Length: 186
Image (cartoon, rainbow, N blue to C red; front, side, top):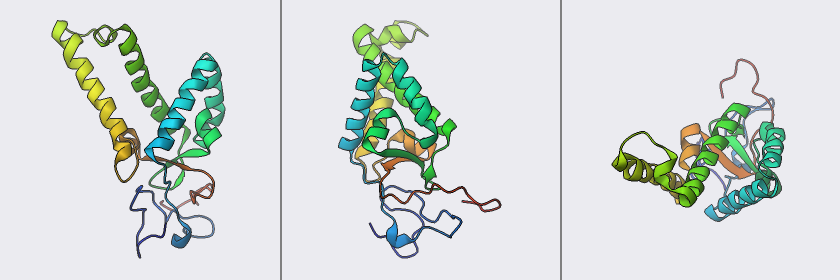
């Protein structure tokens, strides 16, 4: 997708495209935004859940630990998706990647455990109305809002917006793998 003249970021996914490299900035005519549809993201999420169930969770965690530096989970690796920093267009740092995956896993776990065991029993901090109605409704609305953001034009989840990340196709994408030269602000 060609960028508008003078644009510093993709108008669809908000990923910066002028991150400096050793040879200069990314050429705007070669930039393509991630283009991941909500369907692509849901398939990857379902594949991650299936792989976690098949490996008893432990295999998925070990595999993810090996892939964290590359900004990938096992399903992202199989589907050639990469989590990038939307401000620098580089693979996201390990700490931010782990934070993102922990938030996503906690939201999924809350929905699954709540559906099986009961939402009011998961978090017990107050009386009947708080445990049975307020907390489950608020947390469910946060999760639904997070997922609904994938259907907006930028195709980013709310957690991606908050953490300044984006999930993109790895092949043919112009995210940067070279380190930022010292003294250069990306």
